[in-house]
Image (cartoon, rainbow, N blue to C red):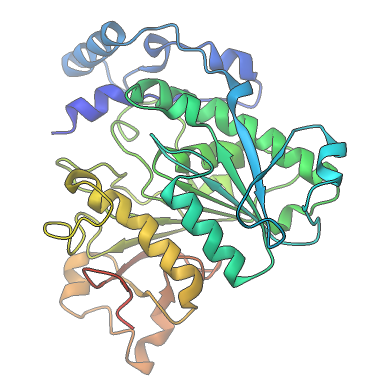
Length: 352
């Protein structure tokens, strides 16, 4: 069961009238509000409120933003909110697309494998502004509860930074925010909180689960956070799964059924056995950046069973191509629904 993970995860909700200070000041006891007044939910709330220190106040000044471009691919330039003088002497180009990468629990914005490999791939693909968000001081091991509670205020902080870039002449249409695990919920909070426009796209890589579907006042990534929200589910298992099981975007991709990934029983690469399927979402996405729009083709299908039976067609058949889109960087912004595909057990993961 996911009871242990469920007890650890809590993210506070935020209405448009709430301030960052009010959100940051919330405690575990304030946030763990069960949807139903059942005995099990009472026990969960009681245990959670006694396990964790209720005085969880994220230090948002510890969040950092680093800029990487083809002029500085190997070292990040720190940008500061409301400091146009710093922005103007940096390599930031207001006319280029902006890729914002947000790490998950235990990661960081500079040497983290996901953000470092993704930014390198983007700079090979094109002349992008790549911005990595470093909220590592709030997401460090072993305090998962603090990291989870921090995702909403960190997302608001990110939104303020994006608003600053927009105020300095960057079009909102240029932004694409990509978040992994808890970072996906930070991305959702940012999209929900931005004031000077609307994000055109958020990509959620294995958004963290552990209670988001069962607790009423948790702020998680949703389709309302951007014009197009695409989500890759790779560990959406009801037992011992670390990812959100339900579709939460406009287009939700479930490679190999989305519960467990091929190769994770014998080839865990850089990930531990328990995190292999969870982290595989980042490997797929990073590969997709340079693989092009013809890779990771996925079939729209109501269930994995029907997909396995071939009821939803074959993406290799031109007749069925209308029902197929690419998973990852080149996902079509008009895609809508649930998509399935198979992958290889080792890299390269795309079958084509």
